[in-house]
Length: 88
Image 1 (cartoon, rainbow, N blue to C red):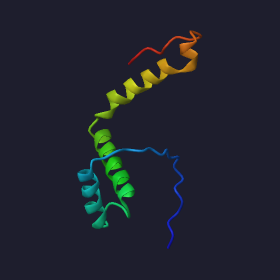
Image 2: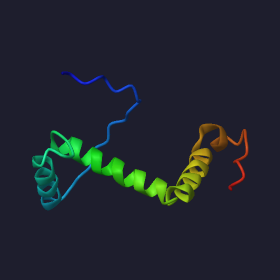
Image 3: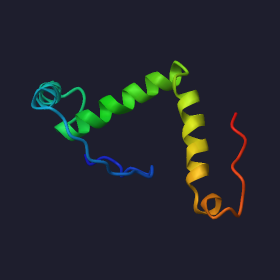
Image 4: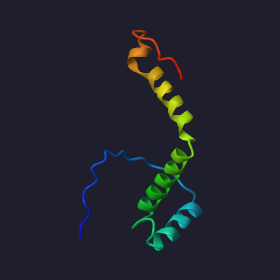
């Protein structure tokens, strides 16, 4: 049975790995527990690590910093038409 299409907005990225890392991903893929191919396995493992970091509270500070940096990089702020938000 075909699976339902993903309704979550996604973004494609490209990463470079060592040959050894790719070999490990291929071995994990062969177990059929993480994905049907190396790319799916990498996506699964990355998502799992991000979820672990969220649960541990490790991403709160990182996300706060990233949001502040994005605000400073906005075209409105670069033009001097607005001021940056206060950082938390």
